Image (cartoon, rainbow, N blue to C red; front, top):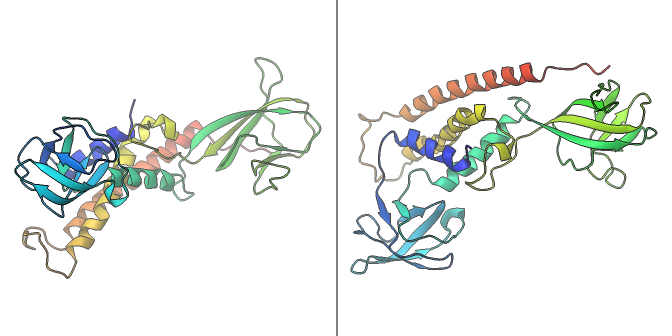
Length: 293
């Protein structure tokens, strides 16, 4: 089952293109509050005022003890969350693409894909008891809706006719409609159980262990999410290159001319656009537009 961690690994692998960042290992387990970390191998680039990553947590180094291979650190740096880490866990020195930033980029991409411009969505269902007399009923248990797909009435165990004359109403008074959404019936229907199918935005990844399924995304979205995260991670690289302050990077414009990063992103943007169109076509085939009237 594909997880956010799998997507992050793929984003990093593609962006580094075979380059291996400097690594080390934790020599002894640390809890979420420890401010001293001992490593197994020579410190090398682990110096004061540098950053390293273990899992999805970033550590800022305040001081180093070369003889004991120990580091005095600030935990949960740059908005990451401090966590316990085990002896032997790999740390990455000055990661170019921190895992927390990629997770945020994946969530931004999930939200963007569900926008009207891109038109992608997940399908959800809810079953509601209907008394046969109310003209409007609350969509109980629903917190967000992109659009209503269909409403079926359970007539028999093997017969669920579609109700045509029904509308989705938004921003309803919470005192009468706790969800804020209501179904409005334009003609009388019999009482029974309603099976409501609706389109909703993709959910967010709450951690690296979150799965595509938990976000409401199918496996077909894997490469599209990876492409989107790559574009978002590269967007700031060209900005950094154009800083007018003195740069520590020794690469000259003859090697990487101005705009080279933008050219790379342009290709990714084209691929992302094509994939969005293909995914939208797949969803349109699976869930064709239905005329309710």
